Image (cartoon, rainbow, N blue to C red; front, side, top):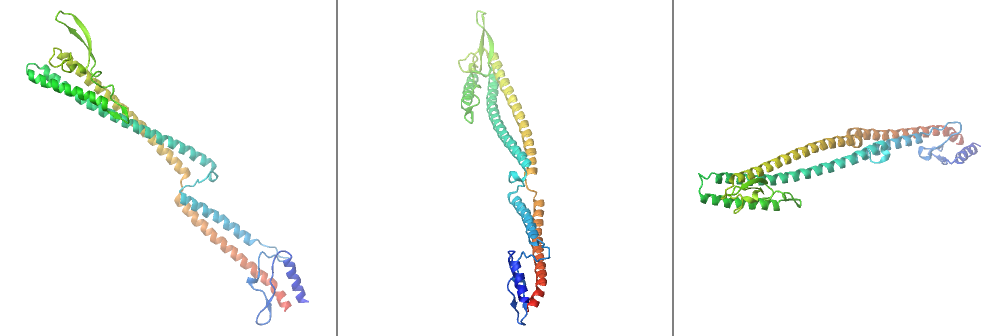
Length: 324
């Protein structure tokens, strides 16, 4: 009769999708169940079931999510790795990245402009040195009381060479394929209008430039218009000096614009970093916290499983004794 009650109890449990193994005989001959023989979840009539495993699994998964998130952020160095992480932050970061690229491009363009202006300044400076040499030779030749004809002729040879050098620089000075001194040659430098009075007293106005200082030219050192030659050279020096001053002002303006762009870029990158980059100290703390929560969840699940097994064995023990 007791055996039939036990079989009925086992059948009732089995009908609910659970399993209770057959009783085994220990060496003393009494029937008993062991922990290994019991499979959960187990519902005992009259006792309210506690979903301890479900609780432990839920806690474990929650902790695992925290661990995964921390590991991802630590490995990528970013706390926003996809739009789902922070939709509004993702939009802000994207906009900041676009602005950052624009500023990088702007800074690169300014760099090229500064380099171009620097090349132009170097070319004009070389021309200016040549013209200053011309000025010295013209002044020497104008001092007729202290210079011989042979010395004047020697100076003229130097003047011709300097003028050739100016035209050569004008035609061969390039920056990134662009001729940057094309307008600075002996035909344009020192442009000046002079009045010529012939032997009959007639006056005519002529336009002259550095080219007229060549041998045989209207303003050659052996001619009668050395005062006009000095005016032409002074005009060339003044034009080149003014041009260099303008180039220097352009470079200063470009450098100022570049500093502003760099400052904005720094602020933009800092704002993006604050939104996107990982706080390594915080994420390391989150990782440790998540791992601790994982271990705690595993411990709680095992603890409650053990408690349930012991409660079930306590309930089944009287039936085992009665069956014996």
